[in-house]
Image (cartoon, rainbow, N blue to C red; front, top):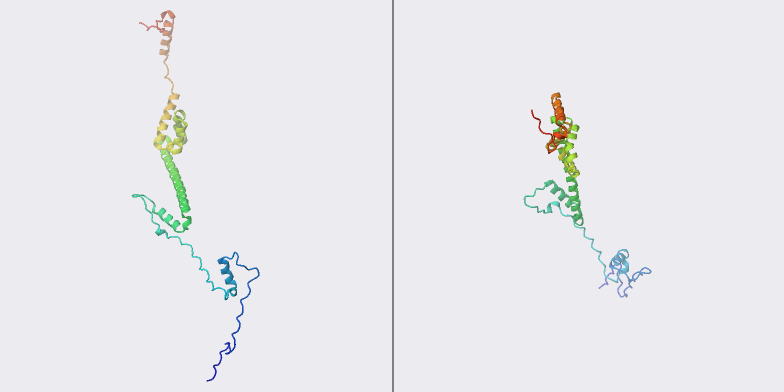
Length: 237
């Protein structure tokens, strides 16, 4: 029986096995002291020949899991009090902000959203207040007594200047009630009456009444004609 034909690269029969080449020497200064698993994996990745015949192949580290995605806004369950009147647009805005914010930053986003709503409410209230004051002034100017607005306003200020405390005058001005039609008309009537009282003069005395008063003084002005009370007795016919 003929001898089998050796395969290319196979060890010829009857010959001792060829010696195995030793692994390459590690880089100079390489020690295992302080070597962590991460460094071993990096060394294995860059120089795999160093680990031939020494240790089994080290599998690569699994990739880090991605951070959890924020939950969708529709997953946010809000329990509102019964009969609560809440603008649905505000709820939708909050859900959208919630869905776009990372979980670890949502607490701060709630604070930011509250401050944002508070600022918007203040601006809306100021606009409504200014519109209310403007409407009150227009109603006053339509009144016949307030066509000269600045003059009528000065008359309405008289009772406040004379009788009101600074705190009351400030409260009326800041609240807008100073220009409320009913309040302004009320103050205007009082101020107008105050002005009439200060300019009122006694009626003129007739010449006949003046002559009688003078005659009365001549006849009864002597001290002996005065009574016990010091007043002259009534004249007799």
